[in-house]
Length: 330
Image (cartoon, rainbow, N blue to C red; front, top):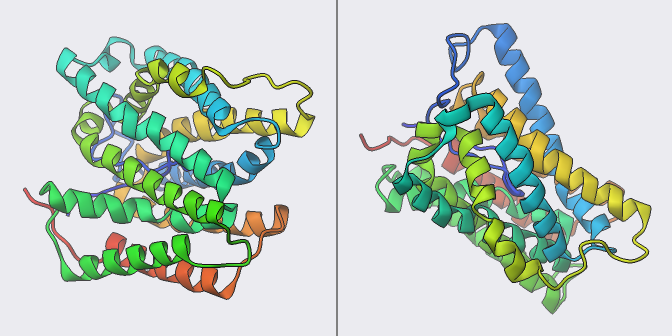
């Protein structure tokens, strides 16, 4: 089976990345065959990545006090384009420049991977809870495998098929069910975050050959840059610098820009050059646990019995998809 290494843009964003090879910058000491010291560095980097993405929903909730989701997405795209684009040009130079044909595909992928993905996640998070965002997050590899089967990148197996069914049913139960904080807005937010997971999965599947060709960091930088034209469409008439914004809102925005947008992507690329992609899948559970536990402790959100059962079933179905037997198509 080919490895589908996962780690979230989005929250989220992920942040999950398909990785087939390490890209142009790979050295003999990196990759799955790296020594124990290099692997330890890779695991440490992945832990920081999961913490950065896992706390995204918490800081997002705090930022919503003064910033709209559209403004936060606008800030992320502009900042991410400049920071990630600069990092890639500095580290890879002309090697990161795509062909004209690849540039067209990257432009299309930027919609699913950045613009639509980010708007759906943050609009969904504003309407729903951080707990629900953490429990819906594992649907990304589930959708990714299902789409990969449809486009014949992966072979279907009954174990993984059952996992998709279990996880999808549980996610819909979580999205549509009535909990302690249920409202029509909550249900809409949950469905938007499920749609966010599906949109990012589309990006992961169809960016696969580009990631193999240019490396994950270069592809991420390009989809950010190629999303810049969308910013005026959804964030052109909102306040990017709100009057009388509280210090905590600015600190929360700064966290979102520095850690889930920049640091996490840089460390993710660093880690995937040192750790076998197939071993990184387990970190999706850690990211979800960080989000859920932090939402309960830091935001005071509730964990109902229905939420707990649906979340456990999402985790179980995701585990079947990630670790069940399957073979890739040649």
